[in-house]
Every structure is written in C-alpha cells, then in structure tokens.
Image (cartoon, rainbow, N blue to C red; front, side, top):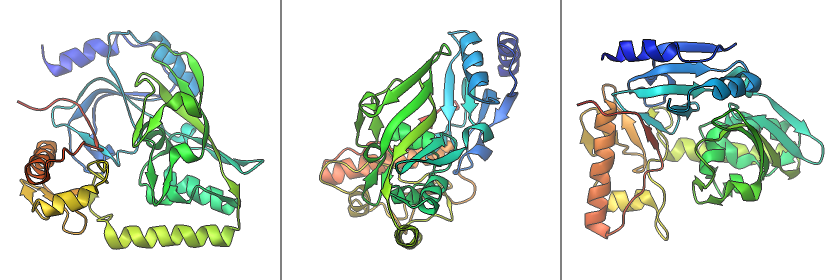
Length: 307
C-alpha cells in the first residue's frame, strides 16, 4: 500500500478538530536543520480544549509525536508515521504574576520568556536567553544553559495525556535529571508556571546580554544547526572529547562538525538527515575509540530512515 493511501485511510479515522489537519506535511521547514521527510498528518490544535478533544477521539493505535520549534530535532528522511502535533499561537502566551512568578504556554520561545521576566523585574530566568527552543522542549529535556536549569525554577506543569485527560504535575513529578525528564512521553505539556525572584530589570538585562554575547562568540548560531548535539558525560565536556578525537571540521556529505564549536553539527547547504545522523555516529565512534567515553545524543531524532 502506498504512503498516500495509508494517509488517506488515516485521516478518515480521526475526530473533527477546530485547528488544522495537514496531510503529507513537510517537516523540514519546521526544523532548524531544514532536513527530513513528511508527517503523515500534521495537527495544529486551536487550543488546549481542541488538543484534548482530538486525543480523546484519536484511535490509540495511531502513533502520536509532538514537536516544538525544531531547534534540537532531527527528522529522518523517511518522515514520521501517524500524527505529528505542533502547538501554535494559542500556546504562546506569557504572563507575569504575583510573587515573582511567570506563567507561559509551552509554544512560547525560551528567549521570549526570559525577556518577559526581565521586563517584569523577575530574576532567575536569564539562562533561558541561551536556549534556542520553546518551553515545551525545555520542560521535556530539563533545558539549561549558563549555570541554570529548568528544574531550578519550575513550580508546576499542565499536561494532556494520550486519551485527552488533563493533569497538573509538580516539580517532583517531572523526575528531572541532567537533560532528561522521567515523565511519560505520552504527556503533552501545554503550560508551565515558573518561580523567579525580585530583581532589577537593568541588571537582569545586562546578564542576558552577556549570555547573548557568549553564545555569538562560541556557537554557530547563524547556521543550519540543531544546537548541542551530545550531552556532556560526567566529568567531561563533549566538545573537548570531540576535538581531542580529531573531529573538528569532519564532514559526511553535506553535514559538518562545526569549526567554531565541536559539539554542533551543521547543514552546510545540501545535507540530508542521513548525512547528519551518520556524521554524529562517526563522531561517537571516534570519541569512544580515542577516550573510551560514550557520547549520548542530546538532539532528538524521530521518524524513519530511507532504504
């Protein structure tokens, strides 16, 4: 059966929505690498109620994958089967509350949350200025940078489960460790509440500008990249291990290890997802052979490889 026929049959099994259901949706434009195949169906819910209603009526045998702004994501060339959910405008709200708290939708950019906190005189969220993603990804991966992590500021998270049920998770429920949450992948985060502390807006802005300057000096932020590729192993920095293994500038097809920061892979213009993943695996093999350390992927890889 062709992929088109499979997708046509799937759309007929899905419940009605107020948002968008897009058949055979290209995913490459939604990722920072700009590579990868299509989603059988891309769902953009109108709001949290639309999301819950859809999940409640969606057949349980249909795979569901959630993506954010695609900054730390590699979609394989064969595309993603089933439903891909991407939260949009209705999930981008950011509001400063009493007692130095910030409430944000999970489609809100990390940098936008940092900026809103700064404007409200709320300190403690400056590190989000250094993360090029959305709040949903930060919650899922315990996102952090420049000395701060999501677990340091999180109060609670609102989520919707695979059957449309609503949940409120406290910090302990997230089961955080380094760049990882132990919560079920079946939970889709829709909103988060963060706790900061009173601060002077000018001083907060100065710290954020310092983070911006450091990123621009040390990371290839103006290239097609996926951010930090590998987690830092205990007692090591990934970029140092990669550099010591002779991988700086290493290429596979159109993919290359950044000359500026070895823990970044870049699409030089014509890379495929396979090129990028093969390069990452070659880096892992060389680091293991050189130092005996196994690097774990930080970038999330989804979808199917092509034959």
